[in-house]
Each structure stands twice: as structure tokens, then as C-alpha cells.
Length: 505
Image (cartoon, rainbow, N blue to C red; front, top):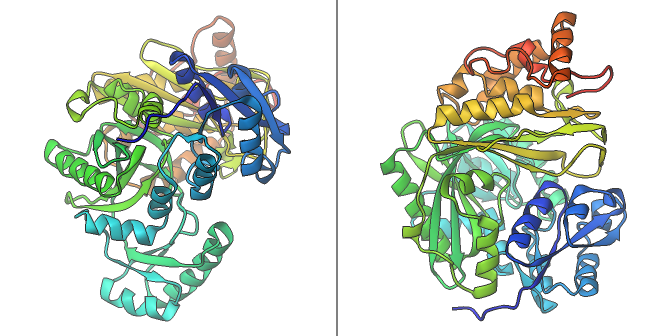
């Protein structure tokens, strides 16, 4: 067992909704929170909800949220004895984790060695295979000619990816050798620019596959547990949009195999804290290791709702005590949870990120609705950072009811002043295929986006706007908002709550 650490004040090395969410658990645990902020975030909500706050530099991320020295300086200035990285920014940066612990502080996450090993797709694949976890047939390197020879053995179509990093950066699909050479060169350039390493790898492309991930937690000494799986197949450009727990595509037998494989990998690397092992699952029930995320996931709320376990608290307790606070027998499923990510982006303009002032914001409320929000009315939405504004999640005893509750919650959400993807989410959660669970990782772009774009681009009927305005004034929802989730995108529903001229919800 690791030596217990003293944790009384935690610096949150992040911003927005995840910083607000971490501060909530710190308060519940009786620990003080320290927010950090750039010049663009001086008045941000995450600064207001923390116990203390330190400025760390200019708006540009490299001058603030990616500035290791500024973050360590803020920790020294505030007297923090631990740092929680959240997700994004430096959360999966091995050098940052090493610098934190080198400064005598507790890093709320895995060790630098674990981050480094799992962040390199080559090393992660090798570790997974050694642990008996199925991996997609593939090959690695930077030589297009050598990769072309390997590709002939693997067979087309193929995926070309950066050996380091994630989030779909540089990812390409190729169907023949000519396309492969071009894709390898292009991905190598992206990989070198983004991660400082031009290496790529190619792997067999799995058709109509689902993205299913398993939440794991380890004590850093070889013990690990799982907290079941999440369904993350609703994606656009390889970025998750809607997630749920448990996966409606996983039966008990497949769940047992998936979770066993994920725990085996966590044990093999002696993983510390919370992490996620991601898989691609074929229609035939085969599954293959995709990658391991060595941090808290954006979609962690659905696991918390479905298991009743606070993952941020778990991270803190492992870091503080050097032991898992619970065993596998304490983890049970108790219903179904679904989450949608609300972004400051304009679906009518190819999801172009947006910035400005959120003049008026209203988030839904209810006994089975959870909102992790980073903004309130009057807050600025800077152009410099990831455009996520909030996560809206709903819980119910079974999936259909949870989906209905999420749809109603999305109808009740409102952001004026900055365009958001709320109309897209409202239409998506009403789609027949989503209701029927007949989706895969490419379904949105293959079958949904064109129809949604046609509806989103249509002129809004003045009568619908007038009716919505009246409903807003009397405090009711938009007419039709509680309609059935089945069916094609409805322009009357996609409008959401009434909007002032020039402002978008």
C-alpha cells in the first residue's frame, strides 16, 4: 500500500464546468479548493465557486492553463498540497504529473509512468496484448512503404492514426495503397505538430462498430475494480456527443468479458486512480482495445448516476490514502443514465465554435436531472478554449424513460447570446434510431446530419416563434416539447425556447 498523503487544499488545474464539478466534491469532503484563471476567465463561474483563486497568465492556453510553472507557482502561493488536473489541458501530460510530485505535491491521478505508457498507442497496444486484451490487427511506424506492406496483410479498409494523443486528431480512413501513402504522410505531419512525434499506426477498420468503454479504478499497487461500461457511439467527427450507462448493446456475457479485460489491463499497469479503457465492439460481439484514458472522462456523470459512486471523491481518496475506498462487490448498477454535451457551436454553420456573452442562461432542474455547468447568465464564453458549456444528464430505472427525461431537460435548457448545439441535441435525442438503439460510431454523419441540416436551415415559422414567446412569458415549455422522442427532427421542437432577434438558444 502506498504511503498516505496529506490532502487539505486542492488546486484545480482546469477551468469551466469540470473545475466547478471538482470544487463541489472538495466542498463535500471538507477540503478547500483553489481555482486558477487566465485573464479571459477572471470573472468565470469556476472562479466564483472555489474557495480561493489565483491568476496564472494571459488568455492563450500556453501562457496559462498549459503553463506548468505558473500552475506550480499558484499552488505554492495558495498553500495547496495537491493538484487535480480535471480533463483536457495537462490532464494526460506525464511531464506535468512528474513536475507536480517533484514539487512535493500530490497529483490526483495516475503516475507519470502510467500516463506515458498508456498515452503512447504503441506501448498501450503492447501492454494490452500482454495482458490478454484483444487488440485490432495493425502496424506502427513512420515509413509509408513499410506500412503499405503491412497493410496488404491486414487488409483494407484501414484507419490511420497518430501514435500519440487522441480525440481523433489526424485520424483518416483509407481504402487502398495510394490513399494510404497520402494519409500516412498527412497524419505524420499532424502528429509531429501536435505531439512532437511523427510516428503513426494503421489498424484494421471495423465496420459499423460501437464505442464502449469501461470505467476502472486502481490503488497503484496492483488492485483494480470496474464501475461497469458506458455507451459512447453517438459521435461526430470522432468526438462523443451523447453517452449512457450502461450500454444498451451489451448483454451480461459481453459485459463480463469487457470488464474482465479492462480490469486485467489496469492491474497489469498497476494503475492508480480513475481511468477508462475504451473498446470497439463489432455487431457480432467481438471487441478490441482502442486506448486507455488516464484521467477523469467528460462522461463520468452517467457512471456516477448509475452506480451512486462519486468518481472525483474516489480519485481523491486513492491519492490521499493509497488504497481503493471500496471493493468490486460494492459496485452495482441501479438504473440507466444518459448525458448530452452542450457546446458553444453553431450547428447551422457546420458546428463552428462560438464566443461572446451568454446574456441569459437557464439550465433544467428536476429530481432525476443533473447539470454540470460552467456558465451562468452574464458570463463570457471565451474563444480560446474548448467550447463545452455544460453536460446535461438524466436518470431513470430504464433507458427509454431516461431518454425521455433527457429530451425534456434539453427542451428546458436555454442559452441566449451565444449559439449552441442545443437544437442539434434536441433533434438527436428524438431520432428513431437513437430510441431503438440502432446506431454506431459513424451513424450521425452517415444518416443523421443531412436531415438535421435541412431542418436547421429552414426558415423558422413566425407562428411558432410567437407561440414559443408566449409560452416563455407564462413560464411554460415550448409547445410540442414533450412530444414523443420518436420521429424525424421537428423544426418546432428544435427551436427550443424563445429567442430575441439576433440571439440564439
